[in-house]
Image 1 (spheres, rainbow, N blue to C red):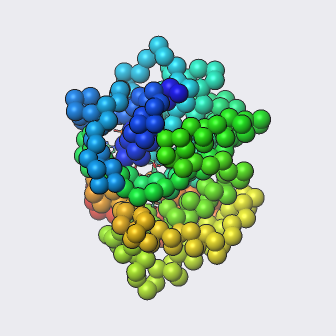
Image 2: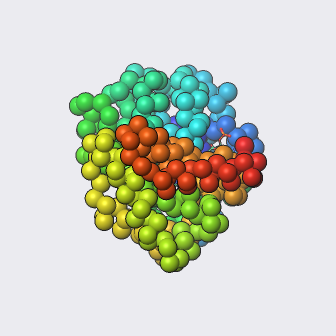
Length: 312
Ligand SMILES: NC(=O)C1=CN([C@@H]2O[C@H](COP(=O)(O)OP(=O)(O)OC[C@H]3O[C@@H](n4cnc5c(N)ncnc54)[C@H](OP(=O)(O)O)[C@@H]3O)[C@@H](O)[C@H]2O)C=CC1
Ligand SMILES: CC(C)(CO)C(=O)C(=O)O
């Protein structure tokens, strides 16, 4: 399958490497010139579960995208703030049947994608895989993960199941979800706790989980997400979601991971996706007249930290 990874940072590199090793025709598109140059010159280097590997995958800057070969599948892996621009940049690669799969963290990305792509070609989901950029052209990949996805358009269920099969054949452990908005809110609860709290407290997920107040904070934040989700027809099972969030504390699985927001803000002084996670819940809370004090404060604290660190 001809697959374009649109946004080949940490996660795009993971998916690119695994799909390429799985025999797919993969091309990376990324806007960071130093990263693109390094991949071109030396291949994409990864420490993959302890083993050092180099994968030689074609790579382009968005400005180099041409429409000579169309993609069967484009997997979006930008940061939320870069999504609209990337959709414009990859337009020449999109044919009538090109499927678009969005696995970004955050809530409501379909509202952006719908402006560029016909509904029948949009597939949305989320992933529990992790990845870290070590530097240009180099990533660190460890642990296990999974993907859930679903079609947005009608009568596209078989296509969604086929996409899950293609990903799973490359070891990405993907499954079709018959209620992806539930899965997205459930995953957003992980990010709405782990990402901001690890960034504010300067810890990994296992270290946060080992603190006494961790459980109470997780329960309160999940309740705020659930109250808002209910207004959108998504009825979260709060105990199950709390258990899912707390499964991230396990140092034997992904507990030693520093969430992507930590990598952005603390490691690289880059702006964060907070407005698409806790910030989205705060905005929706105001709209539905539901108090979301923890999400409001966590959003503001992350914005304070962005200002203090001069994040760009
Ligand atoms: N990392 C993780 O473990 C996980 C991340 N996610 C989600 O996946 C999506 C992609 O995240 P992730 O792969 O972590 O994003 P990255 O920050 O690793 O990459 C995203 C883009 O940011 C730019 N970039 C990254 N680092 C630098 C740098 N130091 N200097 C200049 N540009 C840089 C690059 O594009 P450009 O230059 O064009 O800006 C890159 O394509 C997000 O929605 C995230 O929340 C989901 C699960 C786990
Ligand atoms: C790995 C995980 C689940 C941690 O919150 C994540 O999605 C991220 O790092 O952004």
